[in-house]
Amino acid sequence: SHRCGASSVLVPNVLDFEKEPRSIDDFNANFRHDIGIAEDDILFVQPTRIVPRKGIEHAISLISALKNPKCKLVITHESGDEGNEYQSALAEMAEHQDVDLRFVAERIGDERDDSDGRKTYDLADAYAHADFITYPSIYEGFGNALIEAFYFRKPVLVNRYSIFVTDIEPKGFQVTTMNGYLTKDVVDQVKKVISDPVYRQEIVDNNYE
Image 1 (cartoon, one colour):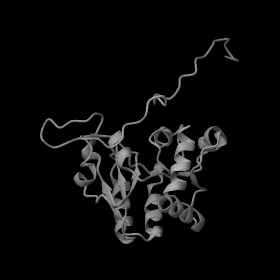
Image 2 (image 1 turned 45 degrees about the vertical axis):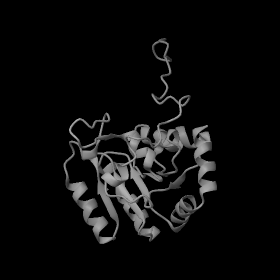
Image 3 (image 1 turned 60 degrees about the vertical axis):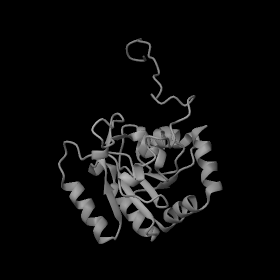
Image 4 (image 1 turned 180 degrees about the vertical axis):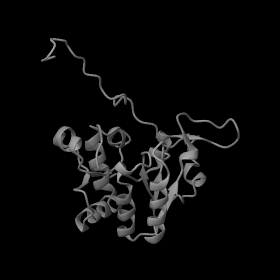
């Protein structure tokens, strides 16, 4: 607008916050069972592709530091076109740190489907069952998964990437943040969120609003 005199239109995120998100229903009720997660497990979901800039090693370190065998980490997307070396490295890291890590991209698609007798879920189903969202990205263009976590009323860990710091953090969201590395304080904050349902509900409601 400043350079050319052209007017611009602000396009909001495609999530409709006036409409409540989907919760657990008849279709996705067996999601945990189908990915090998127990109903009483604490499900940490990393809702991203498996690429190095997502910083997924921090999510593994978090689960390890929590020292709770009920905490399980699920990654919803595939590696994409950047190769599988990073995924292999994450699998090795998880094994060394005794972290239960699941890659479930083959069970999650763009749309729900059960036409072949084997259900394919969508990302909303994964969010519905998640107890906590990990988003330790090193950098992002914006961060749609962060807005999705707010929409589905899920607590979230965020690595303070630059766009988050400048455009999102000042708005007053309540998230657990890290500055490039995991600290005891970060781990303690996550423990509080997953062990205190009243506190958890307060922060996710605040973020949704």
